[in-house]
Image (cartoon, rainbow, N blue to C red; front, side, top):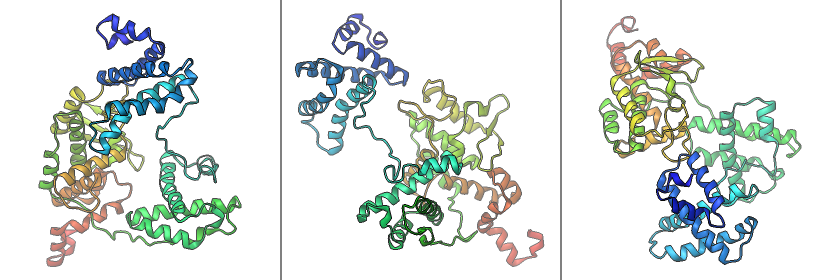
Length: 420
C-alpha cells in the first residue's frame, strides 16, 4: 500500500524496515480505506516515522510500551514545531499533528487503547445505565428520537453538575423549574415543549426504578403552544437569490452547498429530506427528483429543474468524493459519511447570515417558508401547496394564509366567497 503514495520503491522499503514499519503499512491501508487525501497520508507517515525513532530511543521494545511514550512525544513535537504558534488555534493544530496519527495507529495495534478521542458519552450513564435500553427495547423509540433524548438529557446533566446536584435522589421541583427556565432562553417554544416531554419521561423512569421518592414528572411545567400562533419566517425572492449567489463554488464545499441551497429554495424540502437523498433518487432520463424520506412517510416526485440538475452534476463531477456510498451529499473530509440534517440546516443558516439577512432562527426552513410564500403569491391553491411541501394534514398549510396579504386584502374589501 505504501507504493501507492511513494513513487520511489526505496522510500517504501525504508519505511517498512523500521521497527513500526509493518504497523505503519497497516495504518496506511486503513487510511486508504477511509479515502484520506495523499497529503494527509504522507504527513501522518512522517509523524509516525519520528515517533518510531523517539519511542525506540526511550527504550520501547514492545507495542504495549508505546502508549507511555505518547505524551512525551507530543511535548517533544510541540517543543520542536510550536515556536511560531501565535494563537491557541495554531497551538492546537500543531498538537493534533503529532497526537492524531499516533493515537490512530495505537488503536489499530492495541484494541484496549482509547486515547483522547472525543466520544459522546450517554447522559446519566453511571447513575441510570438502563434508561436508553428501556426507551429502545420496551418503548420502541426510533434512533432519531433517542438522539433527541440524549441531546436534552445532556443539557439536564450539565445543569445538575453546575448547581452541585450529584445524587438524583436530591432532585427537587425547584431544580427542575430552574432548568426549564434556562432552556427556554435557548430554545424555541416547540423546543421547550420537546425538552419538557423528555424530562417527564426521564423523571417517571427514575420514580419507577425507586431512584426518587416521588414522581417529579408532575413538577415539569407544561407550557402552552397555540396552533397557528406564529408567522412563517420567510425571506423575499431577491434575498433568496442573494444567499445563493454568495456561495463560493470554486471548492468542494461550495459546490455541495450550492446544490443543497438550490434544492431547498426550489422545492421547499426539509433538511432531513435533503440529507436522505440517494444517487438513485435522481432519474436523469425522465428529469425527475424522487424525495422518498418525507416526514409523513410518503414520497413526492418533482420535475428536475435545469439549474438544480446542473448544480448536482457539477458537484458529482468535481466535488463529491469517489466512494461506493449511494448517498448523494457527503462530508468533504475523510471518512466520507452522509451529511446530517443538522449540517444541511446549519450550512443554510451560515449563508443567510453571510448575505447580511436578518431573520429569526435562519436555517433550511427559511428556504422552505420562502418557497411556500412564492407559491402563495402566485395564487396556487393551498391544497396544491400542501402536497408540494409534503404536509401530512391540510392544517399544516393554513399557517401560510397569514402571509397571503393580497388574499387577505380582498377579504376585507370584497366578497369573501369569491376569494375562498
